[in-house]
Length: 144
Image 1 (cartoon, one colour):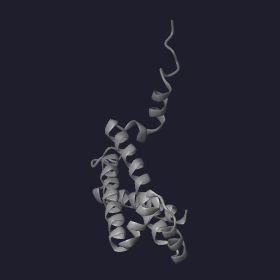
Image 2 (image 1 turned 90 degrees about the vertical axis):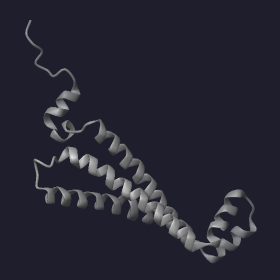
Image 3 (image 1 turned 45 degrees about the vertical axis):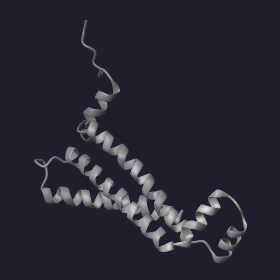
């Protein structure tokens, strides 16, 4: 009986043609999941910043006339806008730092220090993470 000419599984075929996927370990997949979760959290925070500070005076007056627990919380948060804004921005910065740390784990495995100049690796990481954060964590949620 001849050996089977086809790979045992589709995943082994993927790793044959995709060296980046082959270098992904379990740490990288966990870090990728963390990045996705943190990007969603960052987008929600950026969107909430725009939502809270785009209320018109008429809308706030109408909100004060209505009752409900959510409306009460919104009005309580809007009573101290400086605290609200600083809380949103500080929390968003912590989430963005988490994204940077998780992406460092991924880039350490995908671009090993022996295979590329450290400054080039640093530049690629900074450009990629900045693009990711600015587009999906800041601009898209604020436009939407």
